[in-house]
Image (cartoon, rainbow, N blue to C red; front, side, top):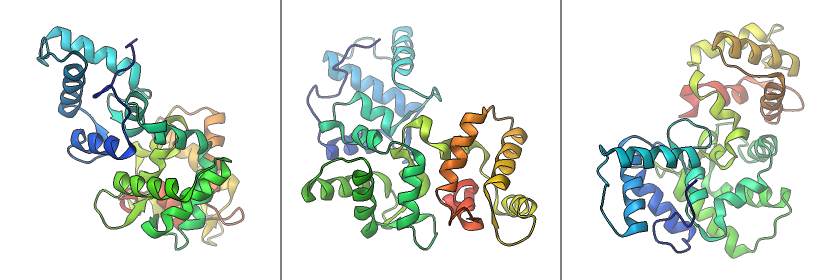
Length: 270
């Protein structure tokens, strides 16, 4: 186990500084620090801690060991890359704003219900001017007190984090990174993003009566089918969790095509 404080400056970072560090290391902006980026990150981290460049050659065995140790501690979902929230856990960000978000976005179904309210045109995005409402909703759900100034700061920070292309819109799959990894059901389906064509035939197959939506039972069958086809090992509790999260997007128990497409389709998620 690495001993804290394990950080770049041994001081508390503001949320904004945290984002700057993130953007510096996530050079390709894909939402992960991986490969070469990860090597650079660990190199700078070590240098900052020790003020030394000793044994910091990435091909060096000691460095590889360090990296292994580091990943074992911080790569919570063991996918070999560091996500923003995993990084937030190891940098002392002021009242660690991201982690406090994770605590109060207790479940993905709460998150999705708030999302549904603000993504009123079902585009899979919320506009930046709606973000503030979305965040204050989540904070209220969590009985978390905040003032206008804090809310403004959170909103700005989240915009800087997630609106990478600067179009003033935030996508569901990006915002879902605020969820704890195990709650983030979108990540579960990341590996099986369907094309619109595949999605269409799947939806049509389960929407037996062709009324344009599927209900909870049909969704259940559809998800089981998807998991089997993709050899995803999901137990029934996991599955009912995903189902609840996805149904939170539904309209009184009717899950329309667009809602499900946002979750399962590569094209609409990007």
